[in-house]
Length: 241
Length: 241
DNA sequence: CGTCCCGTTGAAGTCTGTCAACATCCGTGG
DNA sequence: CCACGGATGTTGACAGACTTCAACGGGACG
Image (cartoon, rainbow over all chains, first blue to last red; front, side, top):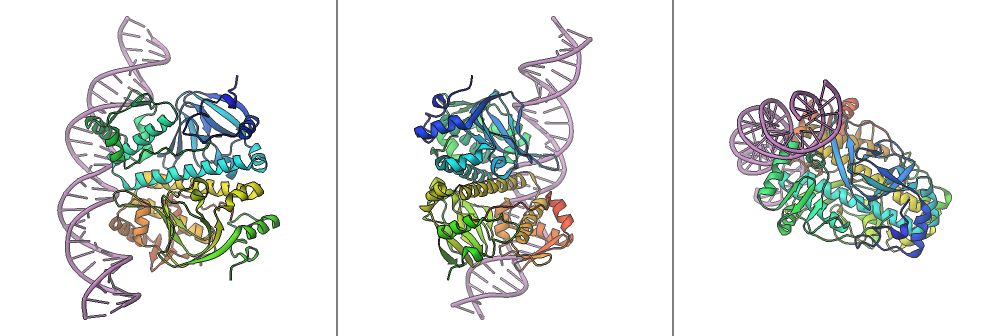
């Protein structure tokens, strides 16, 4: 039985911009169904178009690109509230793949309806543009981290981002948050080798900054973490589709 | 005397999607003026909002982020047809700065009008979303190049992208294209040191692949360049604002 | 003619990748 | 029940790609 947009567990969170009554009704009509995905499910495929767009209701996943030589670049970690498939929706082709890492539930939208959305609902169109800009912003930050920072700081940056987002999504409990990815996933996201990633993680743990074991991230010294990461801990509100 | 959209020199290029008569008229009204910028002019500033949005008519520039430690990540090379300021337009805050590298001419739009655009013209709103998706796509590719490739291939990748875009913009002459940036700019874009960038450029030159001197890029062996870069030479059409 | 920016080249040092071995956990099948 | 393989995490040793430091040349400009 699909979740009503009205009762969406994400909608009330301060991370997300508020909905007008009108927008809420419109999204309810825009939504065509709900999908459950098991770990390993391919939701979207690089280079292909997709008949469906998604909003993540729960669970986590990975966005990644495969290169010709077989190496993998993780371009994002998918968390609740993320809108997936915009590239396919407007360009007709995904630049990356998206895969479920945990069990996920997703709101499903019809790609064909997106054009109707732009015609019928300027506020929602604006929200889509807003989401695209948020994504661009994030990728710029990621590029800066991967391009300019040493491994220790890259990892701290990733952890700070994770934890911040987990808090915004209501997943954090005190100073811990679920982090169901592998060290290989993180390494592929930061342009590091698995071995070196492991060693720098160990160093962050020894330094009493943060530890990540058995799928749980624990931040022991938030100030130090943000400092190493070069981050502020501001909450940037974003739209929810 | 500002250029009429009807006579826009970019509009006819195959790189850009076609305008309907209606869209053309609307853009003419949306455009509030034209701006000339000299090299070094700051068009947009990281962390700030901007009263204006731009479309590049001619000239080139740089998008970059400054990090706390003073290092710089170049997140894009600005070329004619690029739409600047979307982040400020929809999020109220730029994630990067934009600076002119050559003399530039820019179409100027009013930030306040963007909301009116979304209300009044769904096709143009869709075009904005499309542009944002193109940018996201590019940043994903850049992240993959910076994260996964060795220096030699990174540089080949950047050159292939440059040349491809220069051709699409009508700037290329036979196998050459103007490239007014410095080696430091390229190094900051690829996450490499200036010295190493210089040495790998010399190697590409020695290998007869491509050379870049006095602001001009010459592609001596396109097939080899694309091969090293891991790129296809496909033209992805994009909207023009 | 001096200064500044940009490009070029050599040498030395280090961060990070590769190779290799081992521990743990888990599901599968004998 | 236990053996086995596969996936993940951990650690040490070594190699190498890349950075840093340093010096020099050429062109633009005041």
